[in-house]
Image 1 (cartoon, rainbow, N blue to C red):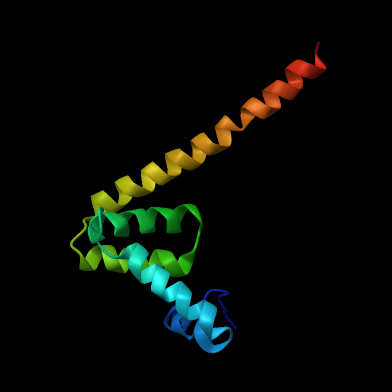
Image 2: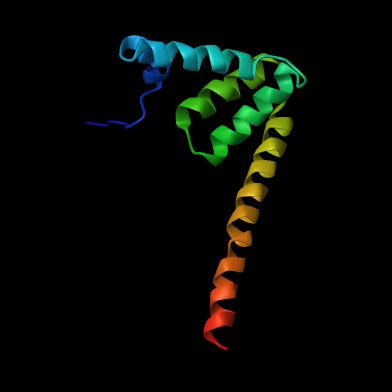
Length: 111
């Protein structure tokens, strides 16, 4: 029996997080709506940012949702992939910059 931990239909159930702790759930959705709607940044720009974050955080639900939203906004495959590369390079840089801590310890121990 094939089973997947992440079921695509679970994404459709996301709005039901208000079932328990409805006050917090509703406040989250209010915040989410304001944060992802056009403001100083366009909806298009925010959608590419959201896709990039989804990819770097490995959220299959968000990857599905924001890939589809990108496509619905006319964002090309090349633009999406370029955004993914920005996120990938940031994650690599974040990892590598932490080597300064490692190097600092090595230098301190070798004194």
